[in-house]
Image (cartoon, rainbow over all chains, first blue to last red; front, side, top):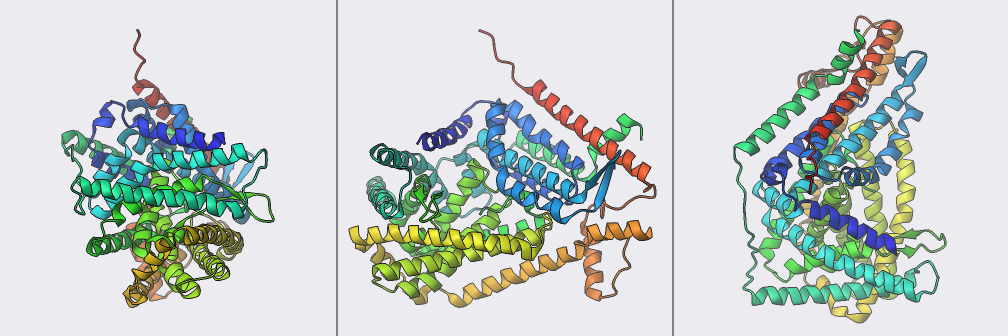
Length: 268
Length: 335
């Protein structure tokens, strides 16, 4: 029961982080969305056995985390939650790919372990980039940026509507589940026989809510278009942010920085 | 099952992004033409409903573990294919951003796998013919289960194809397929039962909601020919990507052959297509065979030295990143 409320609070907390005030929060959302896309493309374009060259990419989320004054522990926990599917698939790599690719002293390292670790690092980096993007931009601003970059208006309106009602309906779903659990007197599961009416009622209430929302919108002059306030402009700071990070990512993609650094340190 | 960024290559991810973005644009244009502005709030609120319904777990019959509704088929039954597709896409979009479920590049794959199959294949081609206009209880359950199983089997198959085509995971195609399809058979049956349970209730309580959705869209409005052409195009694109990567795939093999023979490259097969592909690959790849080609100093000692440099350098890089973060972190103000 607490899990439901916990999930919702977690969601709200990420949403509220976007209201902070910092240099990276103030940037135009388009710059941040585009930079994040460049970041993800660079990270996933590495060879499957690449590990060391992926590590410097951690700089991007870490720097934004610091500049945006975000709670590092919370973001780290959110990022860790996404690992399971990638890791589950990655763990099969050592089983199928047993050629020795690396030797560390007496230790032979299979290609499978390298690619498995590479998958884990990729998952961490891409998830961190996505979550940090939401935390420093906020969902409505991301939608606006995407719309100005060419996303159809109908879909943008759909995203904004969904976002607006998620909190309302998730609260309602949580209340329904809690009410049932309190009355279930210790029976743990909810059978399908009762799941139908329970969720069905929620659906009907949702539908009626949509009808009321529609009438309220008509009363306020809705004629098929939703108007939103547009703000922000793509200025010098945004250009510098996009170009600076973008060229850093491309450079890191081309040159294996940890390798060069290691050669310097070990004298090899 | 959500596809993840970590398992995707840019080519596969980009192809499916394009496919999904195209479908979104097509559905959006259609919704705009339809001019039913009641649907605008309805789609938004029903998307939020799917989130809420996913919070309510039910016990899976005969197992004791718990599951929740996926919602794709339910949305298609209530809203019709186009509006349902946009709603599913928006739900996946929020999941990708707020829960990093899959990731932003994999979003294209996920919208395709979980949106196109239930909305444009399972609902119009399986559910509607099976259920008919006024289905009884048994027929409704049958139609929902078969449709949900179809959608999820296709979705799981697409995940396997995308993963294999990307070539990041070493799982062989057949093995991965044998792993995914049975799991998704079970998930599909459960999804179908749960969808049928909810729809059955709605039919009893407010039958006009379901019948209105059916009556509004006669079957011939679905441009079947256009859809088939679209799928054929997607298949061709995917096929192109797969063959591209198949040509790149023997990298591990190439390496072990290099160890045996001391040569770095396999003798190229003389086929023209392969030659052209290799040429393109050579031009596109930024550093061809960068990590795998053993350089001239490929003796074990040299390699051990290189790997040591990699490990030391990697640790040093991470330490530097953390240091940057600490330096940039705002000091809490006193007072």
